[in-house]
Length: 408
Image (tube, rainbow, N blue to C red; front, side):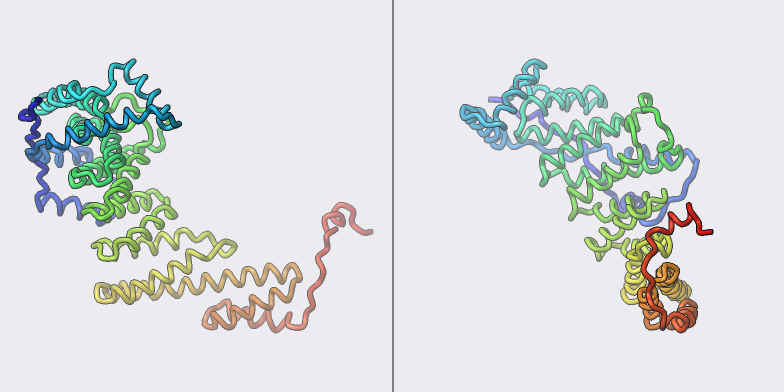
C-alpha cells in the first residue's frame, strides 16, 4: 500500500487584483516599440509574484481506477488493430529507453520531482516529472506530472519547453483542473516573446537560437502567436481568452499583417461581444480593413466590411464616442463611398476603352444612381451622354498581329 503523504504541492497562484489589472490593461492598448531593458524584465517581475501553489493531494481511489483501466486496455490488445499495433510498437520503444509503464517508478519519480521543485532545482524537477509522465500514461498522475513539468520549465525560464508542456496538457486534458493556472502562464510567455521580438526584431534573423534558453529555437514571434491562440482555443470560456485574442490581433496589426489582424479582431468581436476590448477592436479593425484595400482594380469586400464596422460604432458605442471621433467616422464613411464610386468608374473606363459600351453604360448608370453625391457621378453623367447610342464593337483578336505587320 503506497502513501501519498509526500505528494503535496506547496505553492499557490496569486492572481492579485493589481497584478491582474496591469496585465489586462497592458493588452487593451497597442504597445509601442521601445528599447528599454525594463520590457525584457517584464516576465521576471510577474513571475516573482507567482512563486507559490495551493496544497493538493491526488485521490488514491482515482489512481487505482486509472491503473485498472490501463490494465484492461493492455489486455484488449489481443485483438490487434492498426491502433493497437501502433501502441505495441510505441511500448517497445519505451522499453528500450527504460520508460515502459511502471506505476511504482512513476510515483517515485513524481515525488522526487516535487522535492527538487521545492528546493528550486527546476531543471532536475523537469526530468523527474517527465519520467512520471511517461511511466504512467492515461492516469490521474499523468495530468499532474505534465502540469508540474511545465511549471518547472517555466520557473527555470525555459519558456519554449514550458509552452510545449502547457499545450500538451490542454490537448490531452481538455477540461483540466489546471486551466486557471495554464492560461495566464501562456499569456505571460506570449507577451514576453512579443515584446522581445519588437525590441530585437528576431523575424529578420535567419539563424537558429541555441544560446538564449528564454526564447524558442526559431520563430519567436510565431510562437508568441501560438501561445496566445492556444488560450482562445482550449480555454475559450476562461478569463484570459478575449485578452489573448486582443493581444494576438494587436501584435499582427503592429507588424503590418492587416489581414490576419482583421480576422482575429472579427473573431474577438463575434465571440466576445461583452469584452472590454470590443470598442478598441472595432476601431483597429476598421483601420485594418481600410489598409487592406489595394485599389479600384481589386475586391471591395474590405470596404463593405469597413462600412458595417462604422455603422456598428455609430450605433452601439455612440455614447462612448466623442464628437471628434464621430466626425472622423463620418469623414471615413464619405471616403469609403468615394472609393467605391472610383472602383465603378475604373471598370466603366476599362469597358469603354475596350469598346464594350453596353458594359460601360451599366457601370456609369450604377455610379449615377448609387453614388449621386460623388465627383465620379458627375463624370459618369458626361460619359454616359457621349456613349449612350454607341454599339459594341467585336474584339479584334488579331490586333497583336497588326502591330507586327502594320498596313502600309
